[in-house]
Length: 407
Image (cartoon, rainbow, N blue to C red; front, side):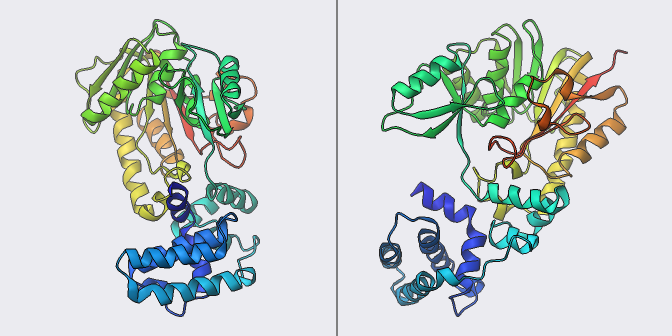
């Protein structure tokens, strides 16, 4: 059922394009419940080879009856059977027609199609769109405070799971095929579910034992606990989060993973954190609230619930939070701005405005201190941009590092 829900949300644009070929009524005029059922049946017919066509149609019609829509069963049956008979003849947009291909094959709304075409050349935009139409890989960060990647991979193998090391993240593992049993080491805190792109952020801060670190928008705590591990549990970490239940989430995660010296506090960074001393932190991580465009595979409803207007509003919030935490950075300290989005408004535009208004900071080239083999992850300016179609299937992330000049 989870696959059906996520699949329909992820491929809604593609499913609607196919249904329009066989539905005599405009989809926008259909009863919402009927349209959802048609998408559910269409997903099974077009995307799931293991489901026989008669079963896909029959179960969808029966579901309509169970939901109190008996008057729609004949209509749903007719449309889905027509789709099943004619699916080989659907006139899908060719890859050369990049705009229509992204919308109707890769299932991207118009505004997001425009954003992607502004960002990348056509061939790259097409490959990126195709990647966002597929499920995301299932990746884990091995908790180096309790084990190492080689031993954990062996445990996975012995438990009947197929896994491999991530290409970039030294602590990362990708589960390629789950076995019948549970993953080993959950209760013991041997791993944290985390995308490979998210794992990169901790390394970019170059944390050290003895430092004072601030994680600004910390929940659910994956990056916070990674910073604790990278600093060998010997750095003082303050983790801020807006909501009390998310503060508790950070604390529970830290306890499970054996992370020490993390102080989680409730604070809305829409206001300056005046309780923190200015120029007192060696490292600050702002993994900012964002549109989540880089994780559309994991949150497929986002592509249909957000708009370009939302992006502009979020960019203003990101600038506001950056301005509120910048005074906390020590001279020669670093402020890392990261987010799981690729929109220009949330990435390059925010960076430029921050630099224009904060002459005491300079943009640091992240290539200079990054691990070997990461060169392709960075732009010419030394900011991070990861893409699922280029970089081991990881989410699309952005990061820029600001260093406070000695005053």
